[in-house]
Length: 613
Image (tube, rainbow, N blue to C red; front, side, top):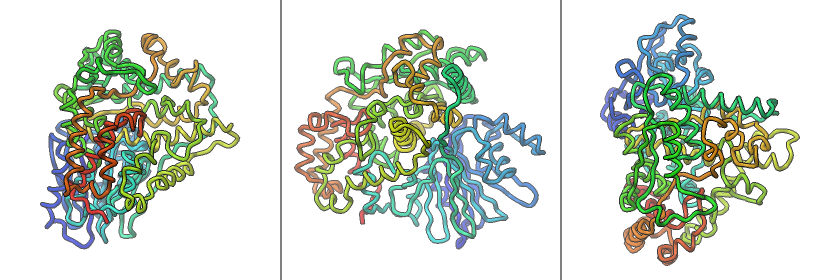
């Protein structure tokens, strides 16, 4: 994994702008701590920060290749899991390889197939390729949006980068926030509308899309989307296919020239990934695989089961580790440290995020990085297989996303002027209705099946990106590459059309996945109720973030102050747990997380010098 930046400008000689490019590239040093490179021509400047995972000597970037009279330059962030197949195909077409890096395979694939190269790729990626002779830029992002890519156009210039921070240091791009951007933060946040870059004039290339910038301007195309059709396989064939696909994608994603590990909570999803990874390690003589789980100081003292968090992970992680013979590591996080890392998490995401759900992953990733460079995660299984509580609550009427709750209650914290300006409830409803219009319908589908298809589509395209963004930013902030086997597009495409009666085989969420893993995992793990990523239940965390927000709201110079009703914020700090005793976002974000989120908003407005207009 890496960090990429680029600047194409038809009116400037970019050979004179080397320092600006270096500054942009340096902003992504945590994504690529092992090497750096730039390539500059009169009207194109590309930068790259490298995290070495495959081919330490042959995978340097930006990489340049020629064919005929054409010169192509690539800057690439990601990992291809079908590199061997790509190499064989391209070699049969006359191409010669100088390395075993996936970067070279990707660049030659573009030279051979042009924009349609993305249809030949299995992996997670965001990349830019410049054609020097045609003076054209090609940008592409993977199908599910695992790897990030932002861009901005200013006049005849276009800029792109893996993270917002690399764009914002360019003199032409100001951190301006209009009503829509502010609504994204205080109404929709920590979610984000696909394609929205929050800052005025900054966009995100959507998952499954590519962009071509030439003398004709910008042209964006969608190359992948979910397609609804009748599922033809019976239960037995479906079970075998799910197991086969998951096992294959896990094995593919173990490729690396650096230490590989897995994140193991003891839940169904991470245990399945770990089982197939451990098996592959044994078969190839790589020894026991390292596994990691996270917990919080004194959590066993304060934990109380609820609808969203039925039990704690630690005993289950130990059970699975012993069953599979892994070398397990438990990372314990202190609440004070958790609160202290909220600002680091904010800087990693460049936006207010999931509060301590982010900062805990940042700290967790930092510990894993001490012994591993790559980790496989069980992220995205709940969206793909229908594991969240809101799938079971699908019949409840709604005019909003099922993970966004208490919008009206949160709006009461905002100043009347801000509510009038951004219309938070209306904004969320509008975004919700827009997303429903995208759902690929299946003609003749029963109403309940159709509604569940809607919930699945919303979860994959609106909720999953929040978690993928979290996973990417928190891990890459410490130079750890986290891979997500459940986001393999072959698996996603297949599971998308499995009927819900089959998906919930046995009356359990993700029932078809449980059935596919029979004999792979202990029965107790197969039957364990879903439990999300753990959070701290220690009241000292709430006390720390409460004091932080108190200091902010009493500060006359606070940029958050004019946006809020100060007395309402004081009441939130006093009564946050009782006022928001149900999750207001997702499954985990309650009163303490709302307090921390608002404190992050203030820090973000200050540190990023955000201008609201």
